[in-house]
Length: 355
Ligand code: COI
Image (cartoon, rainbow, N blue to C red; front, side, top):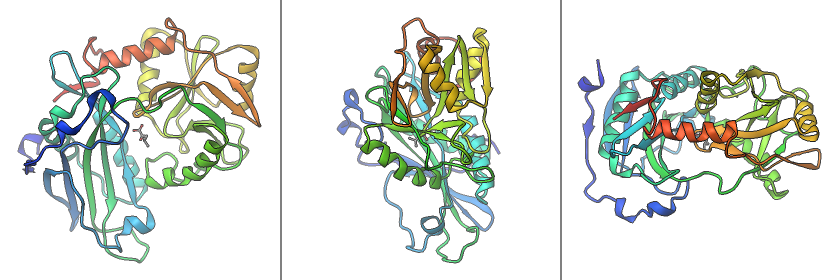
């Protein structure tokens, strides 16, 4: 079955909210577009595929996901090119990662044609919501949750898969100040850190709140055993430029296989920039900050894109991260990825798809 032969019922809104949105002042996550794609899993099958006006769901208070956290999501973006067409970026990788999360959380996988077909129909209908403004895009949130109205602990037998979208601007208004976390953890070996499950984000809120009270915007997560190895940052992967090399923690079962992260690695390799995906210790980064060999430190993710850090704090000391220079690798890769996503340059990787 291809996307064209999928049975997706389309119900268009009679009251678009598009005119209410101030596209010149988009705040991340505030505006939700007119429609959503919904599929329901029952009796071992995905069914009732539909694009409907965005709105509330009616759920039992016993809904399994609300109690035991069988809930996973993805984040991806669509862009508008100079001709006004809509382009998606590596959506197929998000589909694959969602299914990896689904398997680990004992949830059904979603077939490629349902994911891509639902996304395509939704973007066709809400194409007007894709911003054309510089630095803006349409954030796409596919997610799945367990919907059995049942309070025993077991994998649910029914699920919702939904995609909705939101026009967004930048995530961080200014370069974030980040603190190396040495008490709490995000993930441990054998756990679910490598998945994009809701609980990973819930568990990060309290340590992040404590860091915010101390004046930091985000955390750098370290390994669960000794807090000695850098894993990722809150809501993003972490990358460094050290002695002219792009250095980033290798993907493991405690880190997310970020799509922006792997795009940056691929572009660096394409440009002949040396890349090291390896174990990075906190000690090494603090030493590099002290002796000046650290050229850049930044977060990479769909929401944040590339977000250079202003400060890294460790054991009560704030270290200033060098500013990104216009001719640096970080500045160039950021511009290049934006140009690629918005169709300004040719895409040698085959990552962009026109809707
Ligand atoms: C994304 O980058 O898409 C994420 O999932 C981060 C999100 C929690 C804001």
